[in-house]
Image (cartoon, rainbow, N blue to C red; front, top):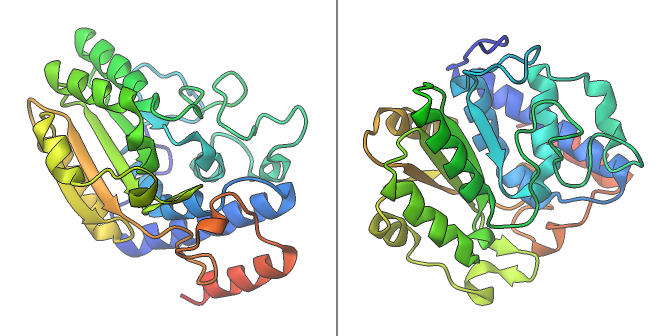
Length: 278
């Protein structure tokens, strides 16, 4: 069960996304290191998945019929931690411990350190393979739970992703829904200049996936895509979510330098005012 209740009201989800963005920025400012742009770009997606679709029990993190969430782009750990805290897995008080020595909130998610983290991620390209294994295992066990996996667009450059894509379709994993956070930027610059991945929609369709394109900051569109994925039978679903790196803070948006740069105290204050005034 989702103890917070499955929320379908777009305004309520927008408010949660604003709260999560502020928590992310506070964590990163306190830590002085971490990934800002990719955490903010995927915020609306993660909030919609957790609070409108997923079934989980934060007081029983290993409940057998829980839906599973895999943050394949592990450098977006601040987003995952902020969402898990909001979902009740642990107190928000420990968010300030991000990246501190012996903190369970490591730079990349560690499943042995923190409840709610299904698998340790960070080596890009592996989350979809893990998701396949989980989805296939659930089917074999006739377990109705679903798998949600958020990937980065730069991550799609990894060869392992395409082996995993073939596997998902081969085993008809319709209990798997992956989302690509297509913000167009990675640490070395524009994704298309580093290693082009387009035409992304055609590629996933050719690999046997049901593909949906949406605005990754439109909560209503995200909910529609997640509903469509849930109704799709016989094949996995890929939601290509078009997003903006650093979304929500005007002076971070679309800037590659904020892939791995954290806000200053002055920027944090300005960013919070901006987010609250939306």
